[in-house]
Amino acid sequence: MSEIILQAENLKKVFVSGKKEFTAVDDVSFELEQGECLGIVGESGSGKSTIAQMITHLEPATEGRIFLKEQDITHARGKALRDIYQDIQMVFQMPMESFDPRCTLGDGIGESLRNMGISRVETRKRVENLLEKCGMEKEYADRYPHQVSGGQCQRAAIARALAVGPEILICDEATSALDVTVQKQILELLKELKEKEELSFLFICHDLALVQEFCDRVLVLYQGKVVECGTPDEIINHPKMDYTKKLVESVL
Image (cartoon, one colour):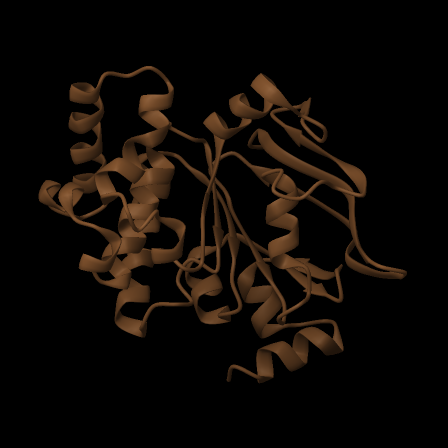
């Protein structure tokens, strides 16, 4: 059995607006093994992205606990949180919005390296290597986000996520803003990185065809709760819950 690298126990997130409360994630538990890709699927508003935000501390958990390599990181702050970002990085849905438009792609990719005290010369060298690893020529380091395509910008975003040498990549709808051809190219890149870099993935996606092609296991979310879990083939070919059946039928 592979080592469990990330674990969520009974995660809950309640958003409060005035006197109203909304439970976005309700008692969600899962484990991610080393080298595994775990897909999280569900309709819009099912809580997929909120789970990613809690794991990366963009949103605090209302209840529950999060473990990274058996260490409780639920309430990590300061240096402990910075250490987490050495192990977990996120690739967002809208690549161009994730870069500062005033800075070149190279500046964005190298920011974390410079923050670690790495010299500008060495940072530039590593940035160029990262771009080439992600299928781009090193000259793209000098281009601005608006000067490249959406697919190229997402490749640069993946390069930025890889800069600190993480063990886990969280892809939050990382292909949904791209056309079908570019989606396939990005998925092939992620597959290659999974094998060569021995990365683990949380792959948040609404496209079951992509999930079936890339993921080892799948969680199905409905109204913030896990309603089904299994391999992609089990979920797609033999769904147990009515909601899962409707989700599958909607893309067939």
